[in-house]
Amino acid sequence: MHGGRHCQCVLMGLIAGLTLTAHAAGAQPARESGFVSMFDGKTLDGWRVTPAKAGAAWSARDGMIVGEGDKGRSYLTYNRGDIADFELKFSYRFPGKGNSGVNIRARKDPTGKRDFQAYHADLGHVGIGKQVLGAWDFHTPGRREHACFRGDRLVIDKDDKPTVTKIKNAVTLDDIRKSGWNDVRVIARGNNFKLYINGKLSSEFTEHLAPKRRLHKGLIQLQLHDPGMVVQFKDLRIRIMK
Image (tube, rainbow, N blue to C red; front, top):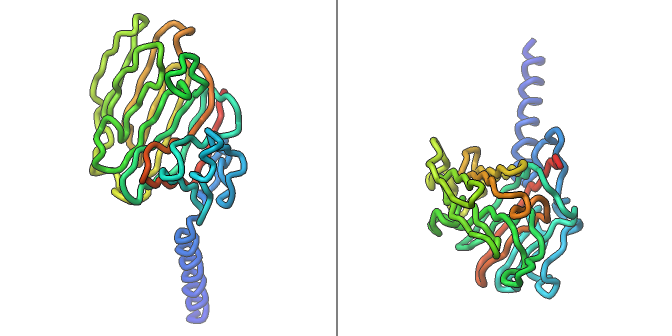
């Protein structure tokens, strides 16, 4: 009887030890239905740097994708081509200060004012301000670039008129881990776009413009914004709906 209890305790201890080891090693999260991994944890296979001359700015190390701003302002583009509707999950960290985020439905900017047109989920270091950390940004030259800051729910009507209301129980600065890992979830479905940080809705917008004035599909890109900054990503996975 006592021997059985001893064996059970030893087994439980081994399981706990293995669990801690897995977490310490930055193990990938458990497989989620419909999601596929975007990063093998070792290489940048499946990604490309844009522009190519900034290739040294992005690397894979210690289970992370690392962007170093001193090596070139740039994007890391996911090689899946144009994607319309999806759910994207990942974790990010800024060891110091930084400004990054995710371009979605990105495409070459025909006006030439930017490299890409896109809807942009903004992520920055704690303290950078709600207009960057947890906001939606409109990288859309040729049309109005609306404000949708952390805590905002924006609705754009058919005439491009914005209405902003506050999100109840939205993520706050206290919910975001300074210099630590934060979990992000981005959902793009039709004309509705949501950004979550650490399980709480941060910002959301819906647009009712004529279809020809909206972005319907495009690339997914990680952003490297400023010299001197470092940003890290891990556990990237996506569920493509359309």
